[in-house]
Length: 310
Image (cartoon, rainbow, N blue to C red; front, side, top):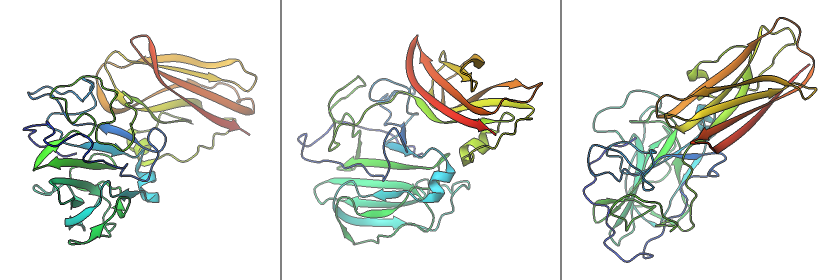
């Protein structure tokens, strides 16, 4: 997370003169998601480029997030979105620790294209930065790996794009206010906007902690004599008024768990769980869980998960 005063978001050069490639070696909507966009509200309020809620006050970049710390530990490369010259780098800042004032970006890289554009890559994993000041790089060059260094509450890459020193929203560079757009902006290909959705779901024998979920829970082993069967789901971009609808089908296809949870406040990331205490041995076989995120009566996203009782 990076906070900065957005003085202007107007594009000062012709559209199409500058183009960004996707900067993380992940698949958007499957192995990563966009948690925050540039804040387009000039005042104390917050709005992303669609007038949605996926931003925070003064946010000047795009946060591309991994689902959990386990994914970060596996190593996900950060890639140069444009060619240019490396102006500077920082490494050696530990992940998962409070940030030092003045080093909010954590471990990072700044690249200059020589024509007034700069791209800054922040929160990279400690020890992962592989380029140096003065290096000439191409689009797609590996810069390092996604981490959680500096002012970061979850593993992600913060990408800031600047033109002549001013932050530019890569999704809607020529808009002076928020509003839905079908244009690809500065990206080489149009990227879908997801107003919220699921990061993960699973089963457990008790309600897990949020810290455990964010770390990345391993596949569960649930015995037939478990005291309870719990289904949980992790969500990003949840809004007040949303509903999570839970259902679990037993091996014979009958309903085993059915219920819902209403969200009372807007949150970047959250989880909810629903369970059933067991008074008898669970029948063996596959239990299939489904969770649906509903918003104003419409389905935003759906996720399924399965566990097999021996």
